[in-house]
Structure formats: structure tokens, C-alpha cells
Image (cartoon, rainbow, N blue to C red):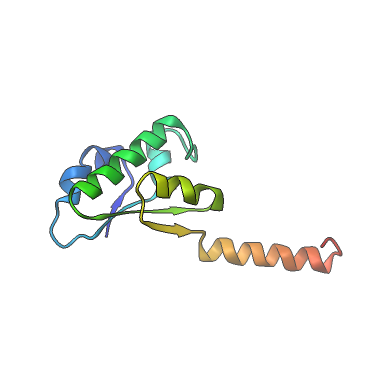
Length: 110
């Protein structure tokens, strides 16, 4: 797996995808959006174009395009852009959600 987290990596996506032994071009969307100057604007046209460019480079070289999203609503969009390796959430986020639910229950807010 090769991570794509900078504009330079996006510009070199074809060369990165051509690396023997790599099977996934994996976008770190938070890092990439930060490095592009559009932090967490994962649905902006600029960021969408970059995601499409990476997915197309991966496909041209027979590799998977991967990404991690924290919002379930983004999963269909990522699939439509060509991402076949889609991770949702994180262990920290899952723990936080669970703990907030516990706290709400203990405070009678459920």
C-alpha cells in the first residue's frame, strides 16, 4: 500500500501506481486536504477532482484505490469515483461514539 497525502504524490500518482509490489494507492484525506489548503473539504470540486485523478491512475495500473472516510454518507461517493478499498471510521472514533452514547444514557438523554 502506498499512501497519497500530498499534492506532489497526486502529481506523481501514475508513477506511484506503476511501482511493482504495490497493490493499493491509499488516500489519507485529512492529510491530503490539509496539504492542499482545503482542510476537510472532502466534497469540494477541487478535492473531488484530485480523488478522481488518483483512482484513475490506480485503475490504469491494475491497482486498487483506497481511502478512509469518517462519514458514512461519503462511502457511495467514493465508490462512484472508483475507490474499491473504502475504510469507514476509526477505532478512536468508534470508541468516542460509544462513550458519548454511554454518557448520554447515564445523563438520561437517550
